[in-house]
Image 1 (cartoon, helix red, strand yellow):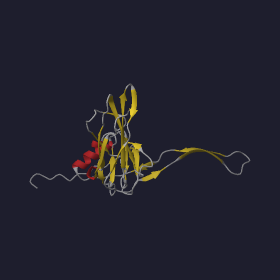
Image 2 (image 1 turned 180 degrees about the vertical axis):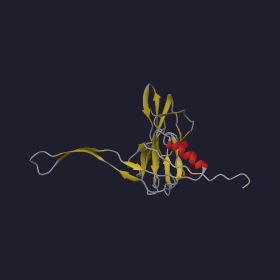
Image 3 (image 1 turned 135 degrees about the vertical axis):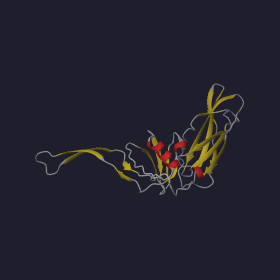
Image 4 (image 1 turned 45 degrees about the horizontal axis):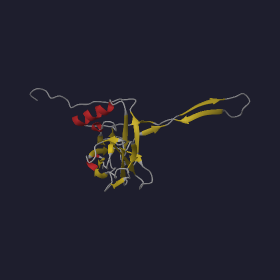
Length: 219
């Protein structure tokens, strides 16, 4: 017999733009090595996707684990479910799901630039100067065979979109945060105040630094 469903809570933390997840695997006779997986739904349970860092999470029975979902969609109702897999009589058995609905929704009134693999770098309420501009190019070659009225275009699939984004700050703390994200060589999550979010990678960086003029001695 599988273990009972784990206990699960999902709590909104809008100040940090995340959902706090607390899960506790429950034991049964002869069970060992619990592995818990948490999934998220943003469409009332029609579809589910794994929460980053919460797939086959090794733990201890009756011991609570706390995780943070920084990639939860904003401005929509969220539900979570969790199940525990354990070794019982040399078999891998999976429990029923425990479910938890989040009270409230993450606000989506500001720009966020998040680092999924290092949330300490997250820049919330970023001062984006203008909406991003995107371009997408199709790889294609054009041939003009002799005798044909129209050219022949051979094209490949469309690739990813390229874009530009300008972010500014006027504080030392803000500049430090921007520098860290500017130099990060990995995937970032850009969340907009319009309801959409997109994973991006910074490939080209340019910036302008300004400072207050120094005061003269005795001035």
